[in-house]
Structures are given as structure tokens and as C-alpha cells.
Image (tube, rainbow, N blue to C red):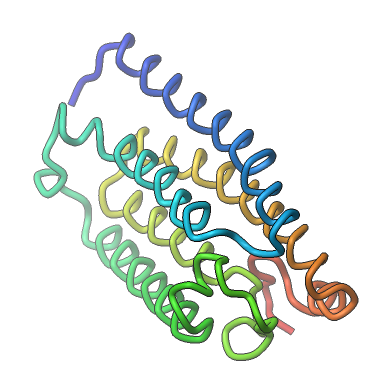
Length: 193
């Protein structure tokens, strides 16, 4: 599978533009909505889907243009590793969403109580960790430079989102949130305490 250098540079530029736009989106728009309203409005909450839809589109763009993923052969050990990582990541995602509660709460629209139990006892952002692991699992199953680039851009985008949410949560829950942050890692701690 060969890519022209022009395409690689164009693809990396698109990822960089997405990272930059996401930075300004979270730093200006989302942060201001949180500070003004104490929560995200319905529109602001769902507008975040746009960032991740564009990220997903960019992640799979080379696949649509150049190759068919299932045709890429990986060794058995890579397949098993990727399958296990993807399975664990889906479990983390499901536990995170179920433990957090309603969909509106997940979108930052309804944040009436700080969640510190269940899977949130081990990670303040299990869904983010789960999706990041899912991308990493895809990278093991279907190794490619663009999956790696997508994982890196996801890390930058999601970290900015998390930092913005943390400002909101600290304003909303004050000392209770600071105490929670001192006990529970932002993403994960190994070995867990």
C-alpha cells in the first residue's frame, strides 16, 4: 500500500488543523458556555459530536481512498492482542456510560451530582480512556501510520476537552472535586491503588 507524499502531508495538515480548531473550540466556546451557564446547553453539548465526527472521518479517510482494512493481514499474536485491547476498551466504555447515567449527563448538559463511584473510582474519564484504547486496538489489528496519527490527534483533542471540563467541575463542586482529583487519576494509574 503506497501513499504519495503529497497525500501524507495533506493528511497530517488536516489533523493539525483539526487539533488547532479543537483547541480554540474548547478553550473559547465550550469553556465560556460552562462558565456562563454552569453546564453545557443542549446545542453546545451535541456540537462536540462534530469534532469527533470530523476526527472519525479523517481517521478512516486513507482507508476509503487507498485500502480495504480487512485485506490487511496481521499475525495471530497481533490479532489476539488487538482483539483483547478492543474488547477491554468496549467494556470500559460501556461501564463508563452505564455508571455515569443519563445521556444528557454524559454530554455535560445535566451535571447535578459528582460521580465518584463504580469505574469512576479508578479513572475520572473512563469513556475517554476506553475510546483511546479502542483506537490503539485498531492500530494493532490494522497497523498503519494514519491510525497512529489519528491516535495522536485524539490525545491532543480529548485532553483539551478534559481540561475544559475540569474547570467547569471545579467551579461546580469546589473542594469535593479537588479531593476527588487527589484520589483518582485523570485517565489511569498503574498499578491501581
